[in-house]
Length: 317
Image 1: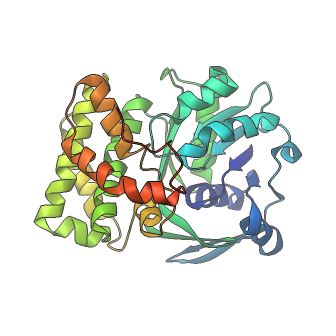
Image 2: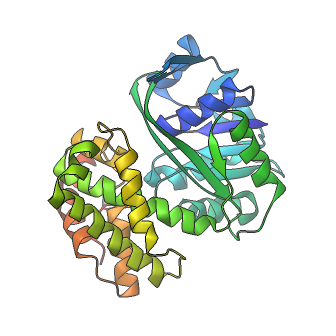
């Protein structure tokens, strides 16, 4: 398959690198120093098992140079998705499909509004990977997965084709029976861990071992479960226990991208994570006091990181 990675950050770089290593034709869309490093030295993926250097056939900041591709994996931050959708257009042919890898739950709708629903699948991924310097991605832990599927959950040849490409690359890939339930289960995990991690500023090994912060995690998950059910998402009670068990399996020094961005004083995905829980809860009449606390506590720094003038991060009405 010819696959474009739009946003060669931690997730996009890691999964795109695995696909390229397995022989798929991968186009990396990146920019600035990161792009120049990939062009000159290749994309370096550092794991506990060693380093892999990916030397792509094409790395560019101009999607028009790539031309139409079979699939586009969107790895940008949540607030960048609308702009990414417009930028992706030169790579969209009649059969091209786009799969978002964001941690929120609204990306596929945003992409479909710009590109047409026929070109968009639902998707999610899991990996503890991030850019450490231009051209270099660090990946820790053993949990790396991709889940994707049609937005109406119907079986499709194109979803299966991409799943098989990931499988050939050694990536755990799945087309779940209900991709929206899978997306919200991931949302429940990453938003809870990200929010609690961002306010406590400790890695997961500490966060999960202290009774009070572990209880915060569980309470965050319960609020999201209630919101999901109000939105008619099919999540069952065992999702909480399964998610806590998954947290216990993570590398103890792991952190989420939200936590890393907050701690570095960078713009974060706060609005699309904990802010979205508050917004959805208010729409559904479901109380979310812990997520309100997390969102309100982190909002001043988020506004400062955005120059104090960006109203895209503001308390939901």
